[in-house]
Image 1 (cartoon, one colour):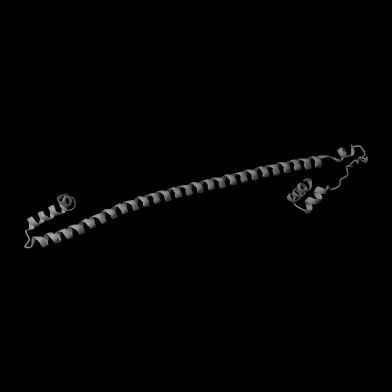
Image 2: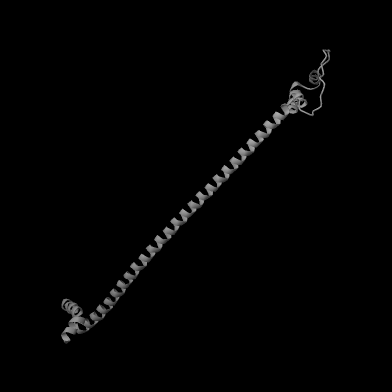
Length: 173
């Protein structure tokens, strides 16, 4: 039973220690073996700590990798959200421009209708107005062939033709 205990707990250590003693042949082999066993225990403890540190480091690296992936997903989601917001903003701007275009078109059509109505009303002559029921009867005036200067010739002497033409256009409108 004692040999089983020694083999289980000291077998590898004693085998290696005795091999070192045989290899180096120290003056005091018992002291050499004792110091070698202390050093062996220290080396085993250090190896266990190193293995634990390696396992901890692997675990930390895995956590860091997972955190990095999480951050990348968040950045991708944020970028996607910003793109969606930009697309929505562009869509709203396009709708606003379309609404403004339709409003301007409606205003333009209304102005054209008003201008056509005004032109139609202005185109009615005095004769058309007097033909209506209840309108006063106006007598016709006949012009005489008198050698009198016309208004245009008088104005032409005073103003230039272009000024008279501009004035005439303004009156006709």
